[in-house]
Image (cartoon, rainbow, N blue to C red; front, side, top):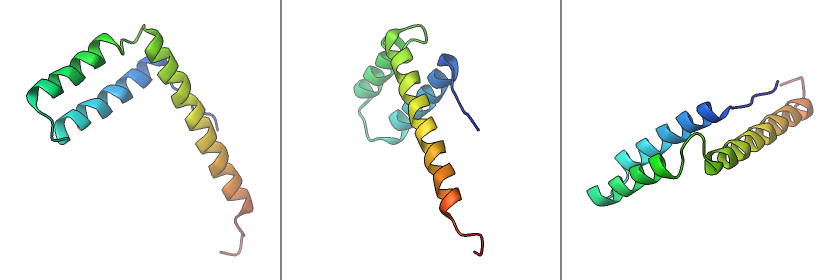
Amino acid sequence: MKVELDIDEAWDLMSLVVARLAKDASLSDSDRAKVRRWRSSTMRPEGDAMRLLTGKLNEDLAMAMERKKRSQIRRPDWR
């Protein structure tokens, strides 16, 4: 199985994580605003930073899937 995110999907995932962290972390209002500004200015879907993040996410997903596949192969059938 191959799972690969496109830039829009990676941006949605990153936005959800950042929003959740900003909400749950004990940050001041000004720090929350800085995080939101960073997300909207630096991490634009068409930007280089998002392309880099998408590539890293896809690499990590591929490695996780490969590890899971290897661990299933090594697992004994009798369990």
